[in-house]
View 1 (cartoon, rainbow, N blue to C red):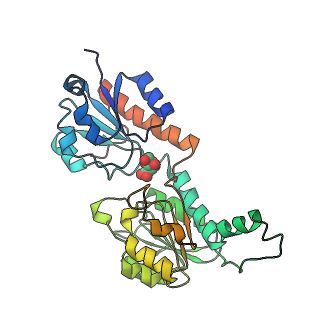
View 2: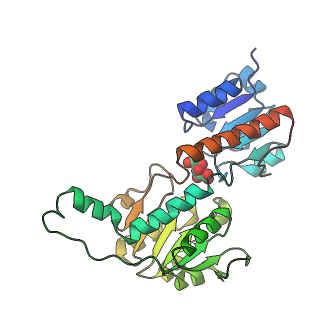
View 3: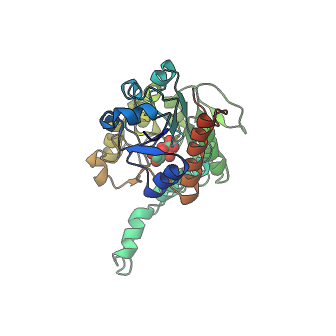
Amino acid sequence: MTDTPLLILGAAFSDEERARLETAHAAIFAGSPDEVASLPEASRATVKAITFKGHNPLNGDVMDLLLNLGVIANYGVGYDAINVEDASARGIKVTNTPDVLNDDVADIAVGMMIAQSRNMVAADALVRSGKWAAGESLPLNRKMSGSSVGIVGLGRIGRDIADRLAAFKMDIHYHARSEKETQGWTYHADVVSLASAVDYLVIALVGGKETEKYVSRDAIAALGPHGVIVNISRGSTIDEEALIEALANGTIAGAGLDVFNDEPKIDERFYALETAVLQPHQGSGTVETRRAMAELQLANVSAHLSGTDLLTPVN
Ligand code: 8YV
C-alpha cells in the first residue's frame, strides 16, 4: 500500500494546481465529496489531509469515511461549503486562504461599479456592432465619483473596497455587527437604513447560514430607483428572487454581480437583465492571486503533515 496522505477534492482544481499538489505529496483525487465513498477503503484510510476547492457541501458523513483525516485546507477565503462544526466535532482542523485575494476581489467590485454606472457592456456592443459608426448613441450615464456607497460587512475585503472608493471621493457608509474604527465612515446598525442612505450597496459579507438573505427584499427596496447593488460575496447573502424582480421592474438602477445561487447554473432570468453586469465568480481569478491561494493551501497541508502550526486556521 502506498502512503497517500493527501486527498485532492474538487473538480474545480486546474491541471496545473493538481500537478503542483501531486508533486508535493502522494495524493489521490475525487471530483466531489460524493465521490469519496467510491475510493478504495485502503486509500481512504491513508488520507491525513484534504485540499478542497469548489462549493459542493462537505459534511461529517464524508469526513467519517476518512478515519485519519486531520486537516481540510480550503482553496478560498470563504469556507461556507465546509461544515466546520462537523469538522471540529471530529477533531479535524479547517484552514482557508485569507488576505492574499483581497486586492483582486476589491478590484473587481470597483470594476463592476464603473462598468455598471458607465454602461460599458452596452457601450462596447454599440461600438462592435457598427451602430456607433452609423450614428447611434446611448443615453448619458450617471456619475460614480463623488456619490455615496454602503458597504455591507466591513471585514478585510470590505475595507479594501472602501479604501479604493475613498479615492473616488465617495461618501462611505457601512454596516457591520458593531461599529468599527474607520476614517470617519458612517455606521448603520441595519442594512435597510444603510441602503436608504446610499447610491451603491456593496455586499462583502461572509457566506453561510448566518448571512442567508441578509440583504433582504426591504433593503433592496430601500435602495431606490437610482441605486446599484454589487455583490462579490456569495449569492446566498441577498434575497435573489427580490433582486431579480427589482432589476426586471427597474425599482433599482442596476447591479454588478460576481456571485449567484447555484453557480454556474444560475437563474436564467439574469441573462435578460440588461442593467446588470454579470461575472462568472472570478473575483480572485488572476494568475498571481490563484497561485498565492494555492501556495497558502499547500503550506497549511504541509504544516499539518509536519506537525507545525497551521498558517491560517479557522477552527
Ligand atoms: C473561490 C471565493 O474560492 O475565496 C473565496 O471565498 O469565493 C473564490 O476565491 C474560488 O473561485 C474557488 O472556488
